[in-house]
View 1: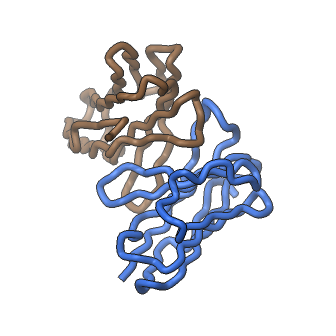
View 2: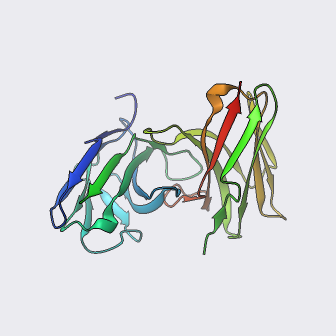
Length: 114
Length: 113
């Protein structure tokens, strides 16, 4: 596709529910990133993939967060047993290279945990 | 500890005038800097970048200046247009790595017609 596509755009989950957020990166982009953006803040890094390999997951806030990119293209961010503090916009980004290049962001998924 | 700071949460300028958005950083390992623009309900859109081997980079109406000794960068928009009204984020990375961009908290720019 022309840009990074994320689905769903909005998700309301009851506390304790599991959610799965999908990201379709730009075709051919090797690198894929997930960021979390709280209201009024800048995005914060969660995890990074190079092709199907998850090379950095240092930003994942707890073991309830899990990300995968099994075929090196589409990625899924899963949050188990959601809590209110998980409410945020989850942004996916992709880039052609790993260094000295811009990352292109999707529109994000706004997760609200009630 | 915020490694990238945008101390002005908001800025208003008249159409046609210059907009100057500022960003300070603390991590000496940062060597690649980017500016993103964000409209409501959309993801950040890349605007312009600069590596630490330069002190200036221009792209049309947008110019980014980097002062390494002061650990400061700024984005100049000339002339400002109403369509430039958005939140602007400064981001930085070490070794040019796209892996972990560190973002500032953003500045809301409003360009008044």
